[in-house]
Image 1: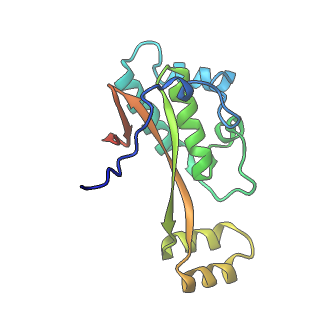
Image 2: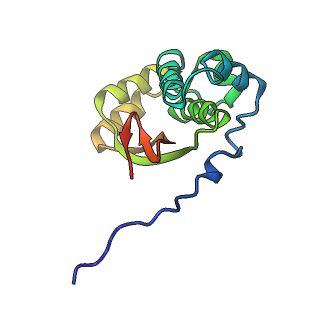
Length: 158
């Protein structure tokens, strides 16, 4: 008899609407941006698309160290992947769309290593070592619960 390896996940989404240590959707800057992006007049699908497009195109990737907070990311317009995901999750949560973080290991490839070497002072030697070792790093994204499904970049996740 085959072993069931399916991971059962709670269908409750309440915890993905609440503020957390990293995400406070009730920050005035988040509320103002959510209203600007159409939280009040757009459907949840349209609003989610507007938020995704905004974060993708208007919050630039940068190798800041240490990571900066949510409102600082909005003020500066850039942040690490984690910083970008906190903005996305906060904008979703303030509109009543559950949002959760998902992290995974990813292999460092030449383009990312080169970006890191250009962004972080003194990282050239470290970048060469990473290139030689085929190192991995933890990366993250946000999944949102929309139309009864967990989705990331428009793809069904459950």
